[in-house]
Image (cartoon, rainbow over all chains, first blue to last red; front, side):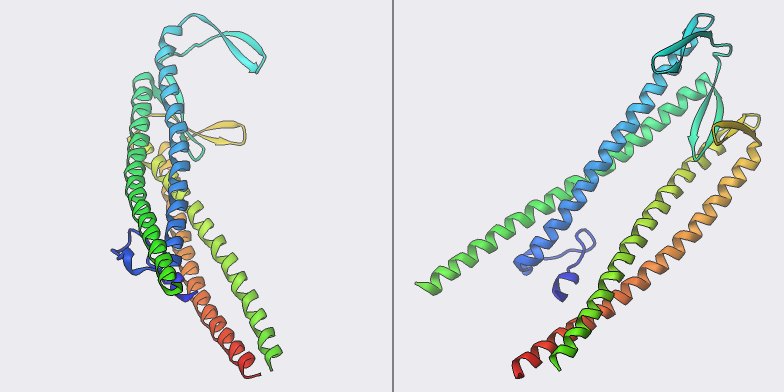
Length: 160
Length: 122
């Protein structure tokens, strides 16, 4: 029990995998699996966020073309009323934590471009971290296999 | 004698489990605070980028209420300060729980080996 809890965190410091026993390796692998899952989930969420920002950016570009034209405003999912956009030069953007800021079209485009860039950067960071963890996981798997094989050979040797 | 130790062990184990639960709760709280802090950071940056005459609204219930830009900036800064303080408190709580957990864990191990000794000698 005590040896497992004192197993060093992967990535925090260099550890020699060959010095760990099978239990420790299994525990480490489990930990890495969990972390990889978290990464996967985060990537999924970031992808959705990125998509939203891209879509919003596209809508803003289309907005200027809609000047003077009649549009249909959805009241519910299946009911629309006609209307016109009076001000196609300014939009109000949700910038988070309940704050909304009015921006002109250029500013809005810039905002969404920045947001997409930010999210993309985060995704790249997570991806590179994920690659490192995957490599560590592979190494642990290999080491575990080697240990299991060594153990079974020992058993054979002692029984024969 | 063995029964007594067994009872003690059970009690200690319960304490340990409770500590574990508390620990997980504290960690979850910290994660929540972290994400809040990040969101506020993004908002602060965005507010800093706005021009002086830009209009800022705050969502209160279903309506957008116009707000002073300077006030909004101060508000976000204050909120970040508060969240930072909360995070510090939470960190302290987490490390305290870690220490407690370790102590109880050691105790548990001691009781376990105690029990085994008693069983062997009995």
